[in-house]
Image 1 (cartoon, rainbow, N blue to C red):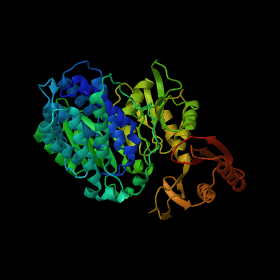
Image 2 (image 1 turned 180 degrees about the vertical axis):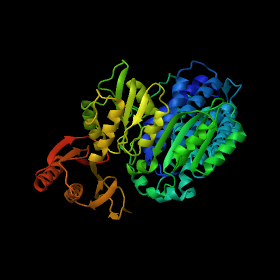
Image 3 (image 1 turned 90 degrees about the vertical axis):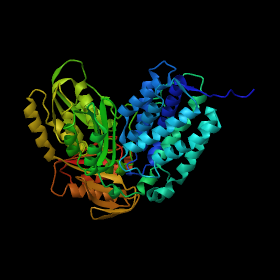
Image 4 (image 1 turned 90 degrees about the horizontal axis):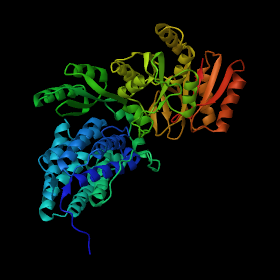
Length: 558
C-alpha cells in the first residue's frame, strides 16, 4: 500500500512544519550567511532568518491545539518580536500574512494554503519601501503565484509543497541574473536560499508523525562557511553603515502614520521596513544616524528592543554568527543575587581576555567584539543581572559604544555610565584604575583618564585586494593596525610584526604586552618577543593568551 494522501493541514501539522523549518534554518545558518552580499555584504542573513524562525517556533511549541489559525497567530507574533535584520523583518511578514489569510479556519486545504501564501507575499512586499527583485521576495512571489494553479490541480499537500518548491528553486537559480551583485560574487540570493531551506524543513513536518522539539542550534555541527563571496564585495559599497532596529510601543498606528514615518526614514537611509500589529511597530533601517532616527521615533512612542550593528565591520570580520543564546553570553565570576553598590560590565571575546577581566574585578562579561556586537537591549539585560546601584560599562570596541550609551535609557533600576574604551587593552587599563571602595564619580574619572595612557596594535590577515589608508593590500598578506589605522602590510609575518612594534614604540613606552589570539603560533610569538627584547631592552615585556578571533595578535603599549 502507498502512503495515505494528506489533504488537510491542521494546527498540529503546522506546528510541526514551523518547528522543522526553524531547525533546518538553524542547521544551515552559516552557509546562508556566507551567501549574503545583498543588500549589504555583512554576512548575517542566515543568522537573522534563523532567529526569526526560532522565535516563531518557540511560540508554537507552547501550544497544544489543532486549530491552524491559533498556531499561525502564535508564529506570526513570535516572528514579529524576534525578527532580526532586514531579512528577518521581511520573513516575519510572511508569517503575518499567512496568519491573516487563515483567520476563521481551523484547518486548511491546498487552496487555503495557496491563498495564505499569496497573502503572505502581499504583506511582505508592503512592508518593504523599495522591493528589489532577485531577493527572497521574488522567490516567495513566484511560489505564491504558481501555488494557485497547483492547488486547483491537486488536493495532496505533499505534492502541492513539492511542486511549489520546484518553482522556488528554479527562481532562486535565476536570482544572479536579476541582481548584478549576486553574479559578481557568484552566488544566489541568501534570503531566497533561506526561504528554500525553511520550506525543506516544513516539508519534513508535513509527513512527520512524531512530536517535534525546537533546536536552539547548540547541537548543530556545520562545516565552517566559505566567506569568499563576501570578500569579493567592497565594504565601501555599503552606503549606510548602521543596521538599526527597534520597537515603537504604540497602539492605533494608522496606515497614514506608517506612510508618513516611512517617508521620514527614506530621507535617513535605505533597507527600510516598517511593520505593525495592535500594540507595537517594528522598525528596520540602514542609516548613518541611528541616534537621530530613534529620537524621532520616540516622538511617536517609547522604544524597546533597540539593536544597532556596524555592517562594515561585520563584513570586515566575515561575520561570526550569533550563538544560540541570542548573542549574549554572560560570564559572571562574582555574580550574586545581593544588591551591590557598584558593578562593572565589560564586552570581550576570547577565553584569555575573559579570564583577565574576571581576575581584575569585572562582574559580568558580555560575549562580543569586532564581529559580534551586542545590542543595547542585551547590554541592559547584563546591567539588570549585575544588580548594582551604579554600573560601569566598558564597550572595548568603538562600534559598541553607541549601543552601550543607548542601553543607559533602558535601565531604570541602576545608574549607568559608559567608560568609552575603544579597544580591549584600553578596557584593561581602565580596570587597573578601578577601586570598588571609592565613589562612583571618582572611579569614572580615574578609569577615563587611563584610556589615554595606552595605545593598541593589531595584526590580522587581508581577505581581499584593496587600497586603504594609503596602503596597497594584497589578499593573504598580514596587516598591522595602530589605533584603528593600517600602518603596514607585508607578505611576511615577521616584517609586519616588527614594523608595527616599532611604530608603536617610536615615542617610547615603559610596558609592552603581547596578547596571542586563537590563530597565533609559538614561533611567531617568540619572534615578536625577541624583537622587543633586542630593540627595547628597558621596556617591561609581558606575553599572555587573549584567545581572540579575527586578530592573530593584539599589542598594548603604555
